[in-house]
Amino acid sequence: MPWIDLEGAVNVRDLGGLPTEDGRQTASASLLRADNLQELSPSDVAKLVRDIGVTTVVDLRSSNELEAEGPAPLDAVPGVRHAHHPVLPELGANTDVAAEALLTMRSQAKSRYPHDPVCGHYLGYMEDRPDQLVGAVRSIAHSGGAALVHCAAGKDRTGVVVAASARRPWSPTTPPRRSAPRPSWPACADPGCTPATSTAGPPTCTCRGRRR
Image (tube, rainbow, N blue to C red):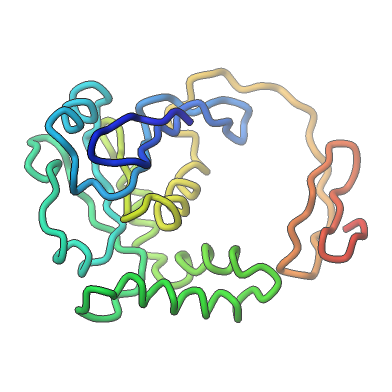
């Protein structure tokens, strides 16, 4: 996952070269993830649009974040489509709405998955705003060139959307690798269990230390 060096953003990465479920790798300059794009310089814009080929920007920030920060440099570029898909609940019109929404989600995550609140937090995006998450994945899939997904920090919201989109092999570049089918093992009843995978036998159930 190579980093893209820009003057006005610090967390921009090309998601090319990642393994897909069928043994291939994702193509470079197809899907990018980033943090806030408000401070992009003219050379940053040229690198993203001219050199990499970005044609779609998928913005996951809330409506209030967009209104507070105003237009971004990529907004004025002809040929770049902007798709707004706020995956946080829209709670109000104050400037701290994103922080308030995240705090609410963290509280709900503990009740959803008490054994794994991090998992509960990320799944909360799918449960709270499924329409927006699906819309973001569709915007990526329908992009004529490279799609650039971003939020404010390029971490939680962006990570969930690109992980969901990676379920489909967008423009894989390497042929599929043949491998022996892996056996299916019965699932642990504990929703907070994170199994340690194994190719030789059933994965270890980490919540109770037994075979699942």
